Length: 444
Image 1 (tube, rainbow, N blue to C red):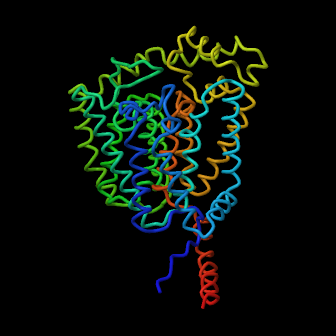
Image 2: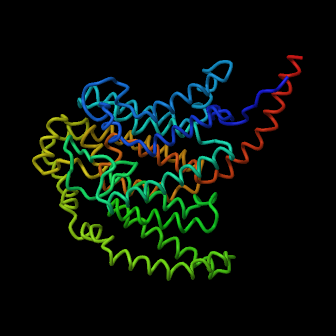
Image 3: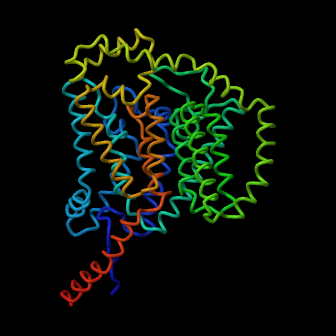
């Protein structure tokens, strides 16, 4: 009689096989290829009032929850893997507790919708539990899927700008931005595109390109770089440039210290740099960079908006700052200061929306969750810093988005596991085998 597979680690890691593998791949496609704007175009009440409660949640979040539930049901008692899966990760439990606190604060104190937290902050936990201990074969297949999705997303963005069409209309605060030139592509909002594409570039330089052939690595990096131009995120682009310079400097120092280097990669660089320079000149002559450069010169009031947002605090009492002001009052102040498109800082927006006390507790939980991610993937520290630095300069995670879930998927799939986690998995395997052997003897 055939023996069932024994799961030696990761109580909520989906079992092997085409069924679960297909569901996880579908979930990633939904995350990266179906934006909130696409849902709105298909008639979902995703960002507006009314409609079914399920319409307020992205399909990828719902599917991730379903996959976790099905994974738990493969055990004799579905509650056991759920309890042990969360029991192994107290930092994740603390983070979820702070998210639920914020949801209660939204409903009971400040009068804001709570569903924004489901996609934005609960979805990342679902994909983390699914993929934190994913097996290597499945991870490698998913990595190729993510690389492909980012290539197509960047190429689609370039096609939008070059051919003058838009994948989906850009809706901000119920208003359709007809004059916006930046591409929406698969991911949706141009700033979300820039933040995640920039994160992808940082990941490629941090070990995330390990599944790619050597010749493909610079090609995918350059395609992503071209995508950054059409997505137009100034903060995201500037920080990517700084990270690339830091990476090059670090590698140069390593070589000067006598560390070995890949001669083939150096040769490829010597050949590719003149070609790259020529390509940049051709694109510049064709006007490819014109709109992006004009946005660097004229930010259309974005910088002043980041100053004006602090003026709102002058109109609030200390009780309102600490416990959370009335949402309608803050909205009127935002309109007074010309902040029609939101508070352009994730941290400030959270405090102005939910109060300083709840915000600080939530930030502590968010830090704990990110620490758990870095524990699983130690190489993710640099990209984690990049992601939140960019998020600090825009509405980003203070609005409904599944971008954080996408970011967590990218880290878990593209980066290698930490040595401590791999060692723990190896040492747990013989024990699991012994337990399975004893169970078979008892059955016999």
